[in-house]
Length: 313
Ligand SMILES: O=C(O)CCC(=O)c1ccccc1C(=O)O
Ligand SMILES: [Mg+2]
Image (cartoon, rainbow, N blue to C red; front, side, top):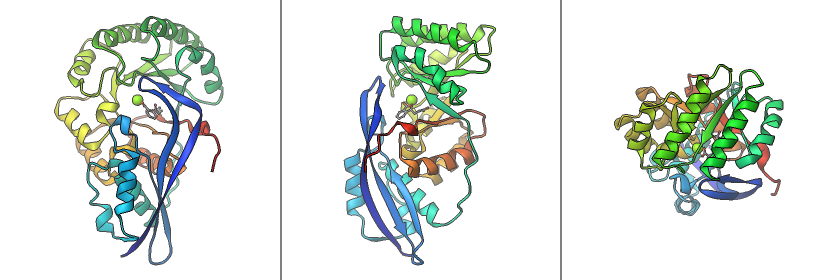
């Protein structure tokens, strides 16, 4: 089968830039893939790299697309190198769409992203009114004393509504003793008698500090989720081999080939939380299909943010 290949770069500005320990992120750039088979059926895909997270750069993805001929084969799509994980996802998901199976995505529970810093204290109610029961808050941005103080206020406010939970995402911005302090307070909250829970602390330490995170899990009740440390399939495998049995955040758009993800996910028996990289609806649809297929737990997915773009082109 021959497949026509086309691609287009896009650029979208966030209504509010995302503030994390990595800094401010203002514009999402990526590539839309269009495949067409001999009958004229079209399949869309998206390459949404996040190089500060461990994927290829947008430039590398563009170079790859520019190197491809206008007519490609299935074989080419399934032999994209592991060094281009976002390209693997983009082309493979476009190909899957070509093949038909247009199944409806079942409605998954979503987590809502709180504004970073003190603004979370006045921002959570709006998200809860919009139906979110799981919220996520970026930490490691302000001073630890301020943030721990805000956490305790947030926890006591959120405890007044039944059944809410909170995820904390440090984006690798803590050191060991800071991680320990955060987890002590999370444990104290989780041992309290309200229904409010801290679901997990995401990526407290840097990408290469797995040993430290393994050590942190030992002394604490509140789970840790790896994110930056497991951005790609290769890293998921490595962390598993090195003994990680906690939660894995899976960002399908940058993790690599969906086919290989399925295989690895089942063979390792992963406890996964599926999450967005602020891709467009094209990448989001393909990611959510994978989440619905693979995620056995009742953990919310992290895709609650698509109202955050300014309309441009
Ligand atoms: O995971 C979520 O719930 C929301 C998405 C999110 O936090 C995120 C989005 C883009 C890039 C990095 C991250 C992150 O988890 O660190
Ligand atoms: Mg994260």
